[in-house]
Length: 464
Ligand code: NAD
Ligand code: UGA
Image 1: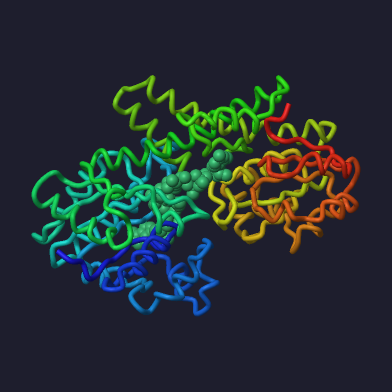
Image 2: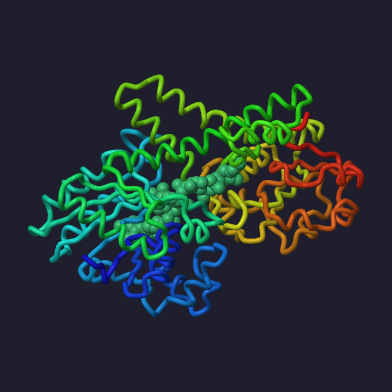
């Protein structure tokens, strides 16, 4: 079966870029991305594609090329579901904040709402594709809803988890290491798998399209994120030992990463990983393992989160200790707020937690981030419920450029690895700061030797 009409529910960091690339590579398919958020859809439809709601290198150009040709953004969810032969579910699956599994399990309420809406509206057979990251065996629940609420329409459910990383989403989508498609191992299931394989084959070599059963596909996504996050927690754990022993974490990473069995990627020590998914997906994995009674498995993976929290805490403690045990009413300038470079996404960014601890110590935080807006920073702090919104507003401010941000600061802390930080005029920054001028590099990205020559007193993660 050749697909002519795709609907994607959820116009977020996954739905938007993924569908833009499918539309670009498959001009014969009409792709409509729908969302309950009118604001988000309006932003996707903004005449100036620089104003689309998600910043990703090359994304606005693709949207400019294909929007209105075969890519559409709409709030008319029912119409798009009705017209589509294939529906991607790309809604958010955050950690539950209430009830059974609170703080651990994935909240599947948006998935269920989407499934019920599909069941209610559909009048023709459809292939449903799970694009969101879901607990293993969710497809079973979706199938149950579709088969029991639907009007006799036949549905095939595929799991097609997304492996893109923010900041390199377009590159990852155009040239993925692999695409994973899980489906029912029946004649109809295999036909549905082939239909999705046909779409990806338009630009991805066949050998990179892996097909499995549904459960392997669902669990592989959680496993991939757990392994990636585990590497970061492993190197971060070693960074603390480096600081005690005089070893240098970058040298250790190079030494171990040169072993082809270990490999060099994801060994960059940092102030801690952030992002919307690593923590949420590992907590979900821990919850699933516990619910099957696998205590040792659950404890093993939970340690990845424990080390990550420890890394963020010890960074803020280091700042306080170094500044003579008090940051009260001192100006601390953060370079970066996003959870990584090349994105405006701030979800679970280490910067939020470091700022919160320092504000608890009465510091005044000034932030410069090239892509994040101040209202987002305040919203991030408000979410922690540590103090009221007005206090957060008075304790965290931003400046329009990095030089103004650093003026009169007692210390600078690098929280995001934006490349432009390397290019700043550090002598000019040093001259404008209070002395001693402290610098805490939470990303090990600056030239510490050069900064120390200028006069900065520096701390970098994992440098003995
Ligand atoms: P997001 O919050 O950016 O986007 C989700 C969108 O879904 C929101 O715009 C929301 O309004 C919309 N939505 C929720 N319920 C809806 C409904 N019933 N009908 C219509 N729209 C609805 O989330 P995201 O970052 O795109 O992540 C989506 C999923 O993809 C998650 O499961 C996540 O774990 C997974 N994932 C994310 C990334 C990433 O880099 N962000 C990468 C791989 C996988
Ligand atoms: C991650 C995975 O890399 C994607 O494959 C996956 O699809 C995605 O999660 C998801 O499921 O949401 P993402 O969170 O966008 O992607 O970004 P990463 O590049 O993985 O970075 C995550 C965090 O780890 C960032 O805060 C980053 O700065 C940090 N990090 C990364 C390190 O501290 N050290 C490293 O060596 C690598």
